[in-house]
Length: 151
Image (cartoon, rainbow, N blue to C red; front, side, top):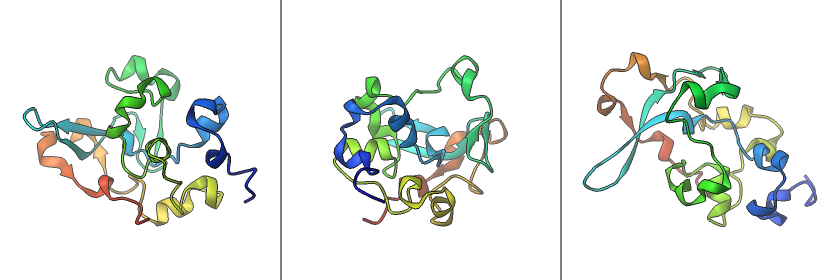
């Protein structure tokens, strides 16, 4: 990859085109997991409960175009919500770039495919169930989505 292709190193999040912004998403689907916030400590907890619209094998939304109408708490990751990037996993390109970090070595923009991400265990594939099947979310709290990239 040439430096010209590594636009995220030379272009700020604010200056990116829509296509560049969208390409930052690695497709891990960790943002599609149900999360809990402790009322007293405000600590964020991830669960292994995925949105019912998520195809858990492909790590893709099955109704991306209508997700906001169908899932009331679906959040659009955008610069308008930059202050809330802290809820994104530490591996997320949007969060990493906003924190001045580079993309992880397995990121599809660096490797050319999502295979390295799945091989590195950085997606939800094989680790989640749909939230409608899960019961009490507190019984499904997990820490693996919070594992960093090891950089």
